Image 1 (tube, rainbow, N blue to C red):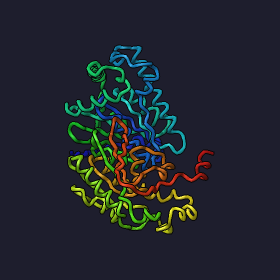
Image 2 (image 1 turned 120 degrees about the horizontal axis):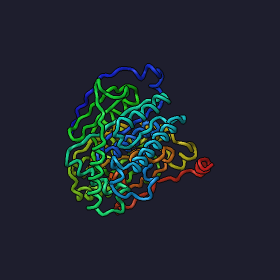
Image 3 (image 1 turned 45 degrees about the horizontal axis):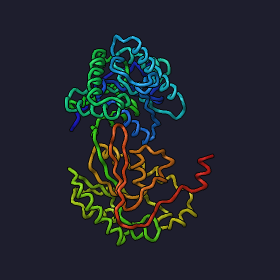
Image 4 (image 1 turned 135 degrees about the vertical axis):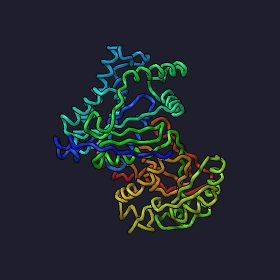
Length: 432
């Protein structure tokens, strides 16, 4: 689905009050009715921003509301005339906003995402007054709009399956409750206007999932432009991705790193086993992405599907470490965090495109797949060099709700174990 991106002009009112605000933290506030994909987008955006160096945290207003309620009862709490429930929801909104504001005031924290409906102009004005008016930080709103019945039905199923509100409710009862909840929110919804009538002097992006378009108003600044570029590309709501290292190589057998070695005899057996397994899945529109090195190409050779070979998926060039054994590497280079930062940086285009695909098998190398898996699983950066990615194993990632679930399928072909535990010295230092 192609998206049309439209830009509207805006004034520079905000820049006049805080001329250096473009360098400060940013709060992104989601806007929209339930079931429009706000929470999934918020968490995907947070994952991308954290990976690319902008420390980000999501503040979910619903989680704050649940702190004030032992268990969700019914849609009645969302009725506009239910004053006690309205007070709880307003308190939850303010707590989430204030904690997001407090977090942004700490050094190194760059972007907070306020995830919630934020359906009224009064709420959006309150967000702007606190974040920009009092703190001088930047504010950006992202509204998710969808009236496509097919998309809404799919989104509602996701809510019923994964929302904590409906964990203990029968499916039919939960669907009826969600329908009423939607009606209550619609009665209160004040959709932001755009263009010259935009209610606040800050960036606003409207995502039209049902129509496949985006309208952006007043977007300026590097963080806002980075976010607009990310949200402008549609991503599937249901996604399955497959990963594998190349088959065992001749260098793996003798315990050396790097190089462009051929597959070992067992590695060739794995390539056959992998091809048989993947073809048996009969995945629609299957794609194969590999590195440009011969061991990954040989591993994918028997799979009948379109293939592309990407330099971004090549293994770390080890420089002075190239062709050393693991023992020699540990003796001469006990700390090797730097190369992973380089791999993470060059993988960004591949990862952003991979997020837009489904049924892709990526065949690459240990360090590269550590970074790729860590992106989807949100592994802390200091743990990436120690993520276990064994040989002769298929790794399957499935998007479930807002997160990815990982499964591993060990193929019945013997191989060496190239995993190295975190050095004891570094463990002691990190513990201390």
